[in-house]
Image (tube, rainbow, N blue to C red; front, side, top):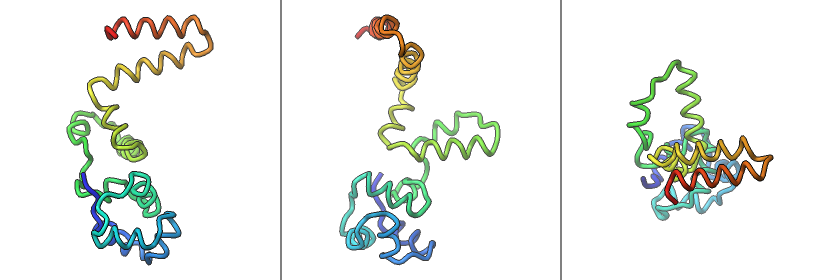
Length: 142
C-alpha cells in the first residue's frame, strides 16, 4: 500500500477544508500536506497518515492506493450478524496500525492473543504467571 496524495486532496476538498484548516486539525504542517497532495512526498510516517485520517474522519485506508480493506479474505470469511457488527469491525480495524492488524490476522495471531488473555487472567499471581509462560513456551516449542 502506498500513500495517495490525490485522495488526500479530494477528501480535504470534500470536507471543505483549506490546507491551513487541515494543518490545524491534524497537527501536520501546511507545507508537508501540500507536498503530500502534489506527490512531492510519497511515504509519510504512519503517525502523519493517522493524524490526517483522524482529521478527515476517515480510515487510513482511505488515504492509501489500496482502497479496499487490506484483508478482504477475512471479511469474506466472517459471518456478520448485523450492520452494527460490521461497523464495529470497521471501527476496530481502523484503529490499529496496519502491521498490528496483519499480525492479529496471521496464523500465529490467535495463539499469542490467547496467551495474552491467559496472562491477564493470572496477572495477580506470580506463580500462575510463571506457569502460564512455561506452558506457552512448551506448547510452542520455544
